[in-house]
Image 1 (cartoon, one colour):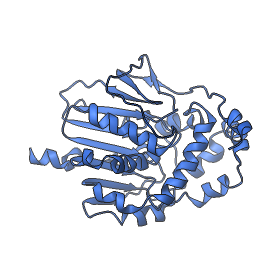
Image 2 (tube, rainbow, N blue to C red; image 1 turned 180 degrees about the vertical axis):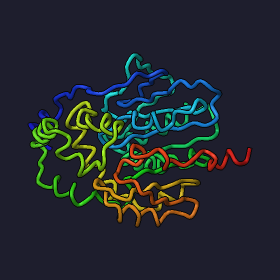
Image 3 (cartoon, one colour; image 1 turned 120 degrees about the horizontal axis):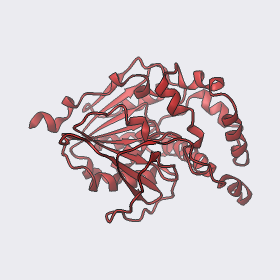
Length: 307
């Protein structure tokens, strides 16, 4: 990448979205992990891994139970979407050797989180879109950590997957130097101009979370690096990574205009039989925001059924 392009791309993007948060926030490398306070005794732990240009608030209304310990990742070089909490540096955080802004880097954040923070043995990791790839990459980096962990891959970026043709068509003519201009253009257009096409039918929560997508990262360079790395990761990662998953669910939307649904399904079908494929009738890539009903119940957690 040319130095002049990098200079344009590292111009900071101001944070445009945050919510009140009750809990603790830990800085891990160039990312963060937020642990929400829960009012009951924790019976299960959910770790949420947000998607490209999203933030961890994607999961907060999906897992509101008083007995759910909710731990939320903020990927590298993304704004932490919380009000009123000062991030702290935990003693367990160790340096990450991967390039920030990549699936590999964020997978290392997830592994440090899983190794140090859950207080229950019933652990679910729920990743949306790029977050699905982050989970699979994390499993590849440290397989034995996931022996008793349940995973939920929602409209996920998968090995041998592809972007939707519409997205590819939009991205192909964009050179690095054009990115800041493209983002400004998108931000100045009313979201209704492209929202219906890519986001499907809107509802209040969707509108709230998806209206500030292009302000999720700290700079434009992270946007470019995320996209290039997603495309590269899908090409060079093969489906043998599924062999380390003990229990899991793929949630596939009925309509997806961000990722190629058929490629997603074809990849999912190469997973072991311990993984369920649920073809939902969700009308968009954002299944959880379309309806929380698609999220599997906790009674399916294997450790819970043994107890």
